[in-house]
Length: 143
Image (cartoon, rainbow, N blue to C red; front, side):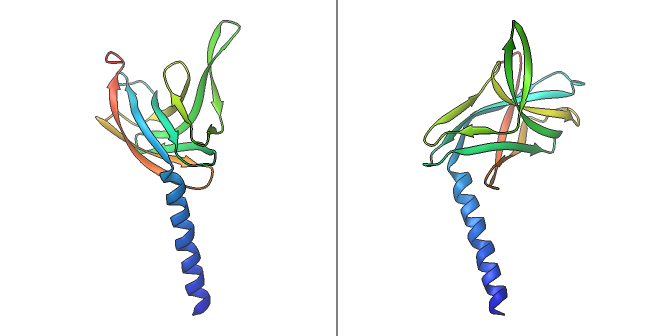
């Protein structure tokens, strides 16, 4: 019995640690780009603020409205604009990273239908923590 109690306490402690680490990241100014029906992919933008004293990396995300979410950067190579997939995105201790049009962003790939007014998204971090955010959908005409 004591072995089971120890295992349960260890599990609770690890969940508390994950919650504390993900709570160190604040999301502000977030939104998903609204596009016309039939478009297969869109992007999400936000500011990620790290209030902790350690670097925390965003490693991806998920949402019910798309097949997958991945981190991308818009890059200019010899005058040609393209998107580059990133495996992670470091948010420096005490700092912030801005995901914006023409720069870093999250791609929602394989949209499953028209976007609702708000999109629930789970952000995943390198330490195993996750955070749910609710992002409004803003038409490209309103940006």
